[in-house]
Image 1 (cartoon, rainbow, N blue to C red):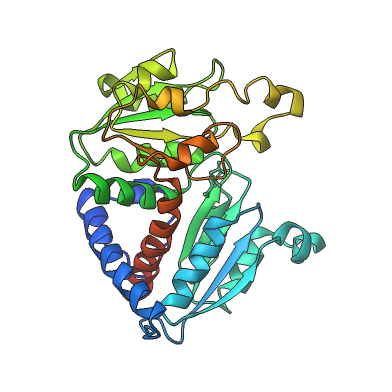
Image 2 (cartoon, rainbow, N blue to C red):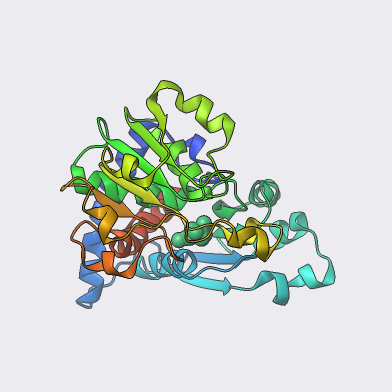
Length: 308
Ligand code: NCD
């Protein structure tokens, strides 16, 4: 697949070869990070500017996009609170903001609460736009770093069983994980609170490869990868509605006793009563390592989008 000059909006754009080549590139980027820490900084993207436009809260995604650009010798313009401090307040449309920012930056990373909004913005941008999360729809770069984490861990993705637990209905991360995992031969074991099941369209596509189970125990017994999502509070109509679900399924040390010895626990973070803090010291926990992998993967993506 061709990356140079492309918008990165959906996991559907990726094929197996493209993913594997991106992972190889990300592995090289880990060396670039190590060199930078020793004072030998990269100039791969010198002269380029990344703009990060965030219409929804973020810690990891925005920082790691920005760190990725800085590690490659590029520069960053950042707005972490577009809803309050940009011309949205003066009723500027997404279309116009797209035209404007693309006159200023060479690449844009954008997060927005509405499904499809990043794609609308991208249609009006003359420079590549990378989707950093659009509502409950997709979060392709998180899924890229998640698959990179799995690939690094197991040296392969084919043949694994992926357990998914949490708010499968609203988690854009798990939706995007599936979007990329489709390129490999994997099985799924899914468990969620009743009412927060995986959307029917995704279940249909998973077909025979997926098994829906009723308890977290049934899931961890089979899973090589335990992919957890928090209950996505901001997608609920009320606090009351959200509270019905939070804390129902928790990955804790008790549950981990039933998990495979070689299994890994992934969570994009933030966690909220879904992975107990006691699991942090379990050698199978990978959620903090994922954050570091995210910088390397976003470096790889920025490089291939800007330079090929
Ligand atoms: C995720 C997101 O924003 O979708 N966070 C992240 O990017 N690391 C997951 C979440 O908020 O639950």
